[in-house]
Image 1 (tube, rainbow, N blue to C red):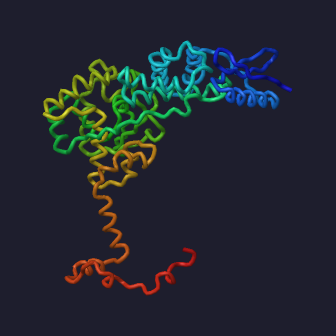
Image 2 (cartoon, rainbow, N blue to C red):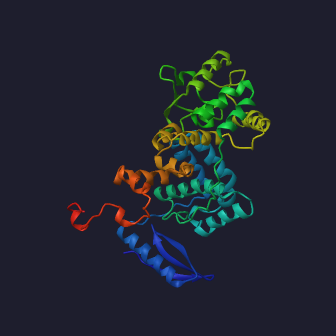
Image 3 (cartoon, rainbow, N blue to C red):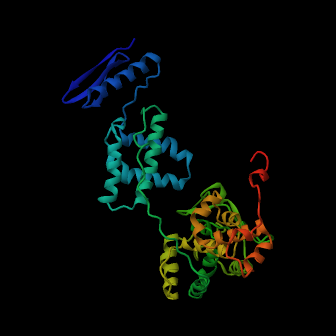
Length: 387
């Protein structure tokens, strides 16, 4: 039967018990009852065989182990590169020399505050830092390095939703008139398909099905390498408009040869550098057209706004954009459907009353009085059984 005691030392209380023939001191804070609670829990775990002796490991060492043993073999290369950079630039400088089991929620919250107030990072950037940290601590619990996840109760900072921007049809025409001929088809593809930048730059000629006039999105280009698209739903087929098809057919005759079979490439056939393309070609084209500065990704929003403006079903919009669910599409683009509720209400009148509703509304004496509508003498008795 395991035994232990609570001891006060240097102003702090400790739960003291023996594990495997050695004495273990677990700091509980300034309250004796906290130490007593910890001691009761540890003795119960020892006596029932559920006790886990946390291995001592520093944060930087565990982070390296997590990146190597889990992240590198479980996620896309782009995610690994992102997580490795976050650990190296943000997490190790803050937690690196701490023992993993000594890191507290207060310290993690301090990291959040420091990154925003002192380093000037945006809430979105801090959320990106917290994502691998929370995942790392989750694995520390699963692997027996921690009993609890100190990051589990840390709330992400609130992100202000930026207003979405997109080009109107007249603005699209202005832009296309001011794009250099070399990039005309690339920008037209972005506007008329809603493909992500990496998907466009990773497009190969074999991905174009000329018989069905469809583009098959199968990969994305990241740091000069092909990677799988963002999600399973991102693997999709996008129907080309006649103008886009004609543009791609002409581009095929004039485009440089590429060993990677790229539709859009540099003159030497190598992949286009995304940031250079935006800085040297896209932003100058906007400036020449006298248009406001927008992101290249806003061409994807432009495509969505065009589909919505012509009344396409939300499932069509979802499938063309490669969203994981229609909910995602509605959350992002639902505000572009300002007349949807009014149209739905009008259709409801037609469903319930048919053509008679128009006669009622056109009646000179109609003032919205109840007696103009069909009377139901006993509504309760006319309800279907079981309603």
